[in-house]
Length: 337
Image 1 (cartoon, one colour):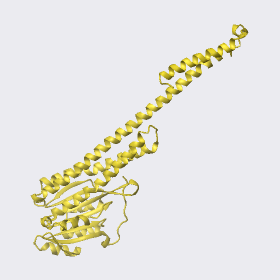
Image 2 (image 1 turned 120 degrees about the vertical axis):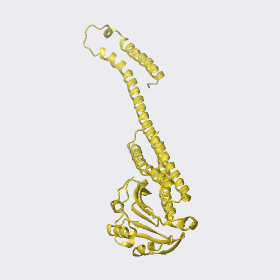
Image 3 (image 1 turned 90 degrees about the vertical axis):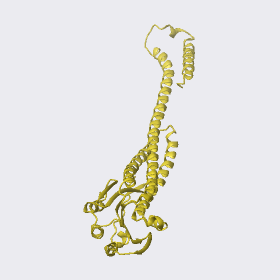
C-alpha cells in the first residue's frame, strides 16, 4: 500500500476547500475565515463547517484563534502521521482517522483526516490520499431534518463516507486474491505471485491497522459526549460501526486466505520436488544395473570364463535387459517413474 504524496498547496484558496455557515440544517452562505468568530458570537444554534487540505501552520493558527482550538490538537493536525484516535479537549473532540484511496496499478494511497468537533463547528483537515468531503456535505444538506441537530450529523457523514471508501478497496483485493490463487495452485514455483501475495498481505495489514481503531472511536461517540452527539444520532454512528466491523472481518478473512495460499503453494512445490527426486532416483536405479555389469568386464583379469564363451556377450546383454525390464516394471508400479 503505497502512500500518495500530493503536491503542497501554495495558496489559501487551495488549502481551504470549504467554509460554510449553516442554520437549522440549511446552508446560509459560504463565508470567509475572518467571519467565523462573528458568526459564532450570535447564539442562534447555527454552526460552521470548514474543510481544509494540507494546511500550513499559519492557516491552522488562524483557525485556532477563530474556534478556540486546543494547541495540542492543532499541533497534531499540523504534523499529521498520527494514529487513529479520539481525544477530548473540554467541550470539543479531536478525532483522527486514516483514509484510503484506490490508485493506478492496484496501488492504494493512504492518508489522514483530522476532525475538530465542537458544539458549533466541524473542521476536517485532510492529509495525503483522501477524497474530498463535498459529497458528505451535500448528503447532509439533503437531510435538513437531521442536519439541524448540529454538526454531529456532519461528523457522521464524514465518518460514513471515509469508511465506505474502504469497501471498493476490499473488493479490489478480493478480486486480485482470486487471480493469484489460480496462479498459486499451478504447482509451479514462480517468484512474482509469491511476491504479490506478500505485498497484498502487507497492504491488508495496513488497512486493518487503519480500520480497527475506528471501532473504539465510534464506541465512544455512541456512549459518551451527549452534549455533542444527540441520542437521536447515535443509531447512525452504530451503523458506521457495523460497516467498520464488516471491513475488519473481510480483511482478517483475506489475510487468513493469503497465509493458507502461501502455505499450500509451498506444500505443492515441495511435493513436486519430491516427485522429481523420485523419478531421478528410479532412472538412476535403471542405469545402475548395466553400469554394474559393464564394470565387471572392465577389470583386467586374465581368468574370466566368460571371455572364452561364444554366447557370453549376447547372454550378458539379455540378462541386463531382463533385469532392467523387471526393475522398470517394479518402479513403474510404485509410481517412481
